[in-house]
Image 1 (cartoon, rainbow, N blue to C red):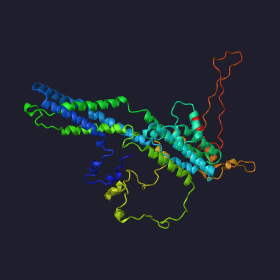
Image 2 (image 1 turned 60 degrees about the vertical axis):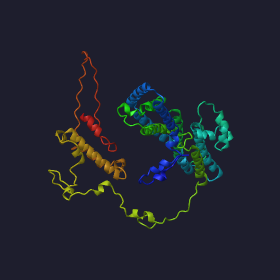
Image 3 (image 1 turned 45 degrees about the vertical axis):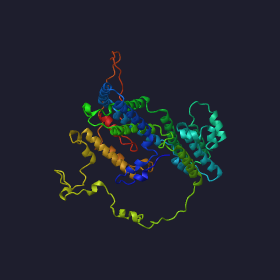
Image 4 (image 1 turned 180 degrees about the vertical axis):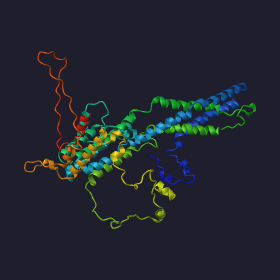
Length: 508
């Protein structure tokens, strides 16, 4: 079962984490005590042999070996390699927990979209959630040893009530050599489609919402399968393990205390127990043990995921949500603050001081400015009051130049665009265009058309170039083909869009 100590560290205080050091279950001591005793025992054996069993010549050779191992053991990048590895494993461990299939969102959608208080409506809702729970059981028994021990065969799944015998026949008759945890999702989709055809699901939007949430649930189950399939690369795990073990193998020799009488550098003190070497082993080997425990959180370690607990919880609450709680509403009543403009919940005596604290408005609300710094500055050369429109918006956006003159191309396009906006504004406010109706067979005049066809504003049509004359009879024809030019088009009807594009074509 997961070790939870959140309540012990709810408030930061002096020595807050120190009370956690005495816990045994899930602790580093429980994981590491065997390795620590083994390392300390080997160290004592080498130290005793150096002190009591070796001859003087053998001692001098051993002392040179100790200095050599101590000098070159630091070349092993144990902290660098181990740090990145543990970071990768912890990140992977948390992502696996986020992929645990929880039916909370799905059961809310099933309860709100699959209707019917009769027995068949109840059967639809319970069966849909049972299929979702069955998929979770099938994928968890594929990745978790604890769940597999609980449901070692499909018969155990049937006896537990997650699958009927008829469903088991269909499940086993499906010819596929791959993991078939996805089969109940297909049953779920087919049953939801049948409920839509019967009107239990009232529209396609509700069916779409239900299947989308099912897809999210299925995606989490699929990610659990892939996390179990694709492990951290083996070479990375091997490199980290070899780096840690080889480093402390060198420390077994290199951290031995030598005879101070020999005058070796940094060997002025002779102790029998290497305290700081043991602490270093505790930290590095403990770090490796953390990665070893978290790399697969679906085992039976103290801090592994409670998969069987999640199965029980999810199955119970999903059935309650779609059956017992379906269409179960309390009588609507006015709340306590119905006639209060500013609703505020009461505080107990232990939290009354929090009412006196001002609410946070934003980090800039505490900034103060001098009075002269809060005055708006008028742009140079501007005499009109601030806030008035500075001419036409389009005129201010476009550059001022020769092309903006009344006879320029850009000026004419801008004038046409203004007239178009004016016509659109008038048409949007009028109930209908008067050009579309006739009075006594005569079409009335349209203000929009008059603006567009005004002789003073309309661009004069360019003269078309005259085509070449036809050759006289009997004369030799020129080696090209004469193409007649199309007749110029008249003004556009007032119900068509503004002829700005035609104006640009003629000007081009």
